[in-house]
Image (cartoon, rainbow, N blue to C red):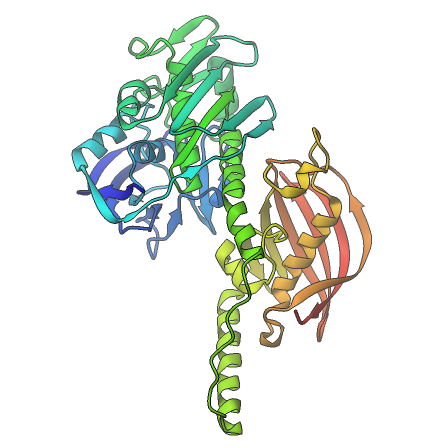
Length: 467
């Protein structure tokens, strides 16, 4: 297996953010092996970090945004593409604002920075994710497919809704082709999109210095096109950056027609789901653990002290996680809930306040139930939305140490309404308010929504039981 790599030296660059318009200084610094790519907000108290992983994607309107709690980083795709394309797995991207500098709209400056910094091999190895089965994804007007391939290849077709400026390009992604064929391609937009973008608080730092504008058949730019197919090559640049959120090098042939950040990140989630399947199967069929070695009999007082220490530790750990104002990532959720994929319906908890809690579930095409519900028309089953409500409510019930590790069993569901279908690509927001909690019985009011619109709601009663 190939070795992991990081930068040899820190490098810095300053500019403005494309969408925020904020002045920003960026520094990319070396990082230890197995730490991955991550962003660090040096302008905020505590210098919080966000790992470059698909689970933290919260917005894909014209760029890719990562968020962890109240901390956000916009337009991450260009710098991630620059690191991933040359094989850097470990680095910290420090920013003193909420968006990397856009430079000239391409990744040329980031590529130069990385060349100046140099790369160094680390002792640990990295295993690329080799796609073993075809994967198809349709999101709106975007079609994407992934096939097994001994390397990383992207074939892309781009155009606008009217079919204007349709371009095609196919390239094997290597450090050499990245530098020569992709990294110089600039971002672009159509003239009629500008009003919408401004109205939605975007492109505050945009100009012809950092973007190409297409108006009718004219191309507005401060310099000639850098490639004949510059638009589709920039789409490939975005795909590389968004698929870096998988967290591992990818061996696959990606075919994309009219790609978008939304579709790219959904494909990243689908690849992660495929990547996890062998691990889940191995866990399912793993032999039972070896019996613990025999120990000399303990005195009753010793057993009581050990039990008291265990309960105290469990209670302290649970209270530390499930406190007012806390957010939980997927690993922390799995510390609280005993559920595991594919039946874990919570990816992240974004708010805990008293008897209210809000969580997210990223609905990806890789969910196993989509194979039969329904072929060609995938819809998330309504009963699984109810299950998500119960699991989120169960997290609040786990505040009581004696409930740690228990399972939430449905007892009843009342006033159930399914209002709209939930499809692959949707982010399911689960808001739950505990209305009653007595012993092991809990009652809650839950509402699931997508893009601010309620898709299902119910009053659920459940009981916590030992496994």
